[in-house]
Image (cartoon, rainbow, N blue to C red; front, side):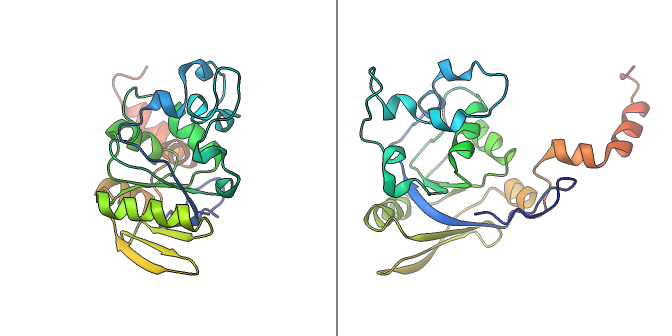
Length: 211
């Protein structure tokens, strides 16, 4: 769970996220795999979580296929661990919305598509990177010990994981702008504008191109 206990009028600082992990293996997993386009015809994002990875999780007759998101042992996971170029393809914000509504609070991966990472930041979801060996090892540890407690420390740029057999902390990288936005609590621009409505209106009134 993330340290998000601030009131609705302010943006919470997200300096770390803790929880169980879920490994989704494979490079170049695009946004259409994360949330198929046919599920995007919605007025709100509510309920998108059940459709995360839908075509990877179910066949044409809606029978379950093998996928981590279908496994009972990962149902309470909140830290997703992926490989290279995760979130590539279209810029659909529905992809991180679906993951968030499934229960994902942070993502550790080898690399992320830039727009996907930006859309995650807008939701307060850290996307931290590590080398292939580190990510593969973390995926293996989670697979062997689903009860592993993982702590993504955005501020310190580390990932710690602990279970009955192991207790380790590894270095990861966080984009400097993302790190600042999350730790300083300035990642939710909509909430910031709402909480500073008077200043926003005053600035808008001074702009020559705003009627």
